[in-house]
Length: 245
Image (cartoon, rainbow, N blue to C red; front, top):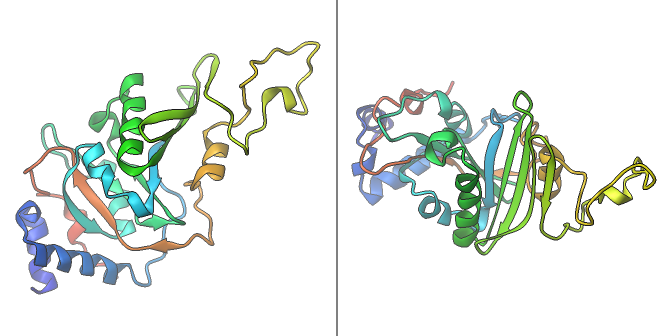
């Protein structure tokens, strides 16, 4: 099957009907187009999940994602701006970055912004992938959140909107509030498990910092676009069909 034919299929939205051979050709196309591609080192997201690259296949079941299509890094970055259908939105799973894969795009509609939605997603991801992380930072709204889950349970969690909340045993790399150089026990108070790291610091220790991704990061394979509902195809996702210069 020629690349032009593949592009026609992508434009027409038939990717959910492709056979295994054609899916392999799509994967080959994405890998070939990624050769020589300058990876982006500033991922456009304030909310993302992370799973290990060697067990990432479990994320599709964990988040109920369907009809995945192989894409390059560049093709998946604008996932939030790609057309959606009623009750179905595209989600981007990045190529492997230093042994991890990031998940982002339309999470507010695919997962939901409720606290139970957010925590439930990271717990399900960890149950399917062994471990998972979630990071959320909203300067305008004053939210700063990160979570680490293993085997379906939250191991460590930090959340701040008005007052900070710490849950779980501190991780080995954390600085506790009582050990911080600016902490004065005469005037300051802190819980025994209270740390000092926000989401942007935590992701550096735990997996991958997306803003920016390290210049020396090892990036492997292709990414995926997947839909939040089955059998809707990818019609009108024109970014997929653009030829890289």
